Length: 124
Image 1 (cartoon, rainbow, N blue to C red):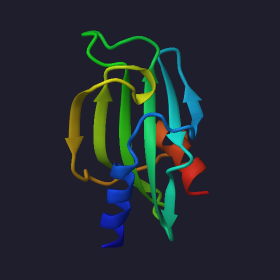
Image 2 (image 1 turned 90 degrees about the horizontal axis):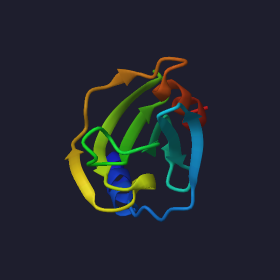
Image 3 (image 1 turned 180 degrees about the vertical axis):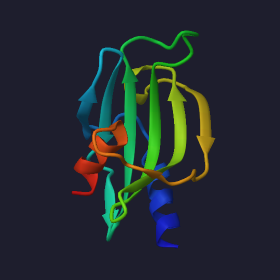
Image 4 (image 1 turned 30 degrees about the vertical axis):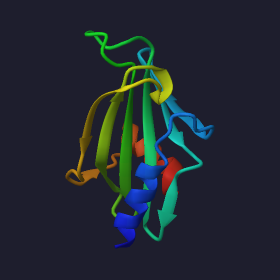
């Protein structure tokens, strides 16, 4: 029940005007942020918004950013995607282009990987 309540709180806090975006990685194509104001940690479980802001629109021109709701299980160093939202504009702005909700499979947050780098900010 606590996890469901935490997920509901995350979904309710979706507006893109959040001022808590912290850059944690950058490539030539994408800047990666997490929302420091909406990160929630309860024991060994953490919930975080992960924003991938593209330098230019995707090949079809349909979206410019992707927002992930993630759940981290900090003790075994794992994560799963709770939802993915593709947004028309940069920094999770504009209209929703596509959305997928529902908890996915657990994956290892391998050290040095993108999810592993985010793990270091969220769980440690």
